[in-house]
Each structure stands twice: as structure tokens, then as C-alpha cells.
Length: 300
Length: 130
Image 1 (cartoon, chains in turn yellow, orange):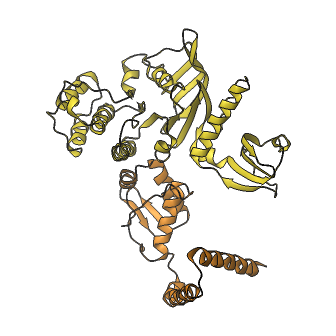
Image 2 (cartoon, rainbow over the protein chains, first blue to last red):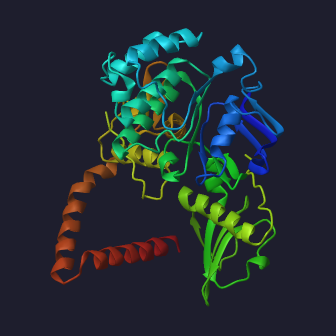
Image 3 (cartoon, helix red, strand yellow):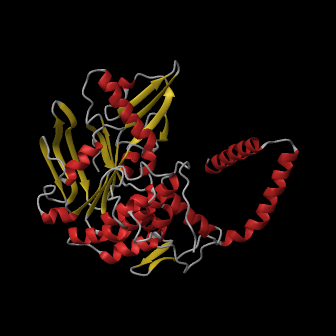
């Protein structure tokens, strides 16, 4: 099966500033990928590289086996909804659908109109008069009706209220179930993505800190609590992601493929949000120590 | 037809929550042999979760021998977990209610009742093994 996304040593600089460095990724097709990181981490840069709006400064990126925006066939395979769901404020919904039909060879007009009807939107209404949630739904409709193999969404729910957010994600997941889409969506909040994603990429300060299928990530990370101990004395296959100590107790978050056998530890599962925060915190510590944060990739 | 719900704070992964809800429904007789589970698309549209999560839960239930998928039709219940012991539930529930009333009467609050139950449950479970 062709990978949805494959990057090798991918980097992009703006002058002397690196927005993305040394990014190596393999994302299988058919996944719903969450791209998480604080604002300014390089999420938008990575997405723009994937859809061909930017070209790499270093390294390579392949999307569905081809170079981004290499030609009409590649463009037709990838749908992109930029941040804040851009639409043409002066154009009606009908205009948007006709525009979509003219610009996209694979346009599914029945699907687009069916979605607009189910959303209860009036075709004559101008996009500028829609609510934030409705505008996001219109942008999603255009992205899905293009019938791409991969849909890329940059911060699709960031500006939506909780109800609109839920409705947007319900619709997105329905489209995934119906059309077997691969999806990459970014957010600075893990909680937005926890239910919908099955693959996660954590990007901090222009580097990939963590990437892999969420089930694998959760199965290979554990929280250990027990009597105070020097993390350096753990077995070699247990990698410490974060550690905190009181005078008596140590709490560690470790990554390991093997079971934890030491009976001194109480072993707990780690939630996705805690896991992501630990990696973000780790990269902050590493930067303070002037070292380069290690790129970690959990293999299947 | 049952309806799924998710608890983000349960600490259980969404797929395990779905598996557990089906088992629960089977155990109390809410789902019976021949009943259809909601379609993947319906679950996805309701809960805003990844379709693969639902598929994984249904595969697990199939693996447990509780349901079977008929391609193009849906997923159907093929077994029951409400066994012969189901008949004893009513009288056990009454005993338990009586016990709870006694515990409240003796001045135990909810937390103490739960703690007492859990520790006793664990001790006896332990004795049974030993």
C-alpha cells in the first residue's frame, strides 16, 4: 500500500529561520492523522509542503507516492482546507459549488448538494453571512466533494465553539467512513483529536518529537511511580521521557516495548494528552540544555 | 438497537468502551441473539470518532464470538452473556439493597461503603484463588 505521507530529512527555512528541520515520517494510507504542536511549531509549514504550496529547502516529501502538486493528477488526489476555512465572502454557496465543479475534474456534485441540504444551508446565501461553523462546513463540503484520496485540514476546529466543533468532526468522520479517505488535520489541542485520530505526529519547535499509530504509542508508554530512584539506573530498554521526584518518590514516564518487571514500581497507563505534554516538556528541557532534542519514532 | 456513548475521563480507550458496552448490554439482556448493532457509519456520525475504532471494536466482539458481520447488511448478535445465573439477579439485588440499607443505617457514607465492598471483594477473590 502506498504511504499517504513519506518524508525524508525534510526541512524548510525562511531565510535563516528553520520552520521545519530534519523531518522523517511514514504515514500509512487510510489513517486519520493528528498533527499536534504549540503555535509556531511548524505545523502549517509541514502541511503546506504536503500540498505543494511550499517546496522543501532540504530533503524530500512524497504524498500518495507522488511529488506534491507535481501535476493535475496529483492535485486531484489531495484536498486542502487552509486555516480559518477560507471562502469567498461575496460569493453565494451556489457559486462556491459551481466553482468547485469547474476547478475539480473529479467533482461529485450530488454529494456536495446533498451535504449542503443536510446542513440546512440556503444555496443563495453569501459565504460572508455564514457563521464560523457553517463556513467551516462549507469548506469541508468543497474539500470532500472534490473526492480526494487525502484531505489535509489546517486547524479546522480552532475557531469553532464546542457544538460546531463536534458537528464538524462528526461530518468529517462520516466522510472518512463513506469514502475511505486519508486525513491529516492539525490542532494545538490534543483533546480535539483524541477521538477522531488513529495516528499522531507531535511537532515542537520545528522538529518531530513523536510519530506513530496511537494504539502503539499508548501501549509502549507507561507511568511508573515508586520509591525514589535515579532514572539512569533503569534497564537499557526503558527510555525516560519525563521524570519528577519528591524526597521519597519518583514518578517517571517511560517508553519501552518490553513489560515492566520491577515490582517496586506501580505501573499505570498514560493518557494521550499527558503523553503529548511529556514530549513537549522534554523538548523544552533539551533546548534549555542546549542539546538538540532527539527525534523519536515508535515503529509498529 | 443500542446506542453507544463515550466517557472521555474513563481512562479506557474508546474501542474498549464500545466492547464493554456491548458486553454489558448482552449481560443484562438488553441485546439478544439476532439483534443488529448500529452500523459503523451511524456510530461514527453520532460519536464523532474514527471509523477504525468502531471496526476494531466490532472485530474484537466477533473474535469473542459474540457477534458476526454479514457483509453489506450489518453486524448481528450471535450469542448471549445472560446465562442461567441471570435468574438469580433479582434475589441477589434485593439482598444487596438490604445490605446497603444496613450499611447506611450504621452510618457509613458512600465512600466507606465502596471501600468496604472493594476490599472485601478483593480479599475473598484472593482466598478463592489460594
